[in-house]
Length: 225
Ligand SMILES: [Zn+2]
Image: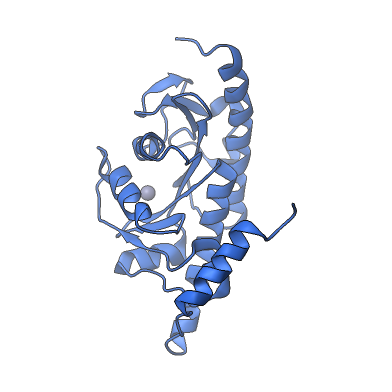
């Protein structure tokens, strides 16, 4: 089966982008060995581009990326896709506004996941980025749609683009792959800061009205326009 026309161009661009974005996972110390991946939806097509399974980050190239359908089946590529392809595919299939999915076992966020505790919203940057605390999703084993379903069901009830899957790790989403990577970076950063704050006492939650106003400003006004 071939990918032709406008989808071809989109796939080639996303192969380059997804390959390059994996360097951000190592740059920010979110992954060890080969455990962590980025996936991007091919806009307008029932396809996604994802990391190959078990390939070291230093060896990733655009050509090594795998193109799958939204059931995680390989459409193009010589390698086996990440074992998280089914979860990413489920998210893309279920949430049409999501263009990127990232998974990591980043240390501090995963420590919260290990205890099954949401990261409370005690920092303005959390209100900005996550619109509240970072929620915990269910324990789910790899192999069917359980992880994807747990991610989607948790994120649907939250403004957060990140979910801590219980006793597993972090899944983040975004309108594109770069935004999902940013959410993974910020998730680890606030998980670390709030953990350290906790060592010295109980941090104070932000008032909901302040969370709402910070979230609204950051999502709608902040940055270059
Ligand atoms: Zn994992």
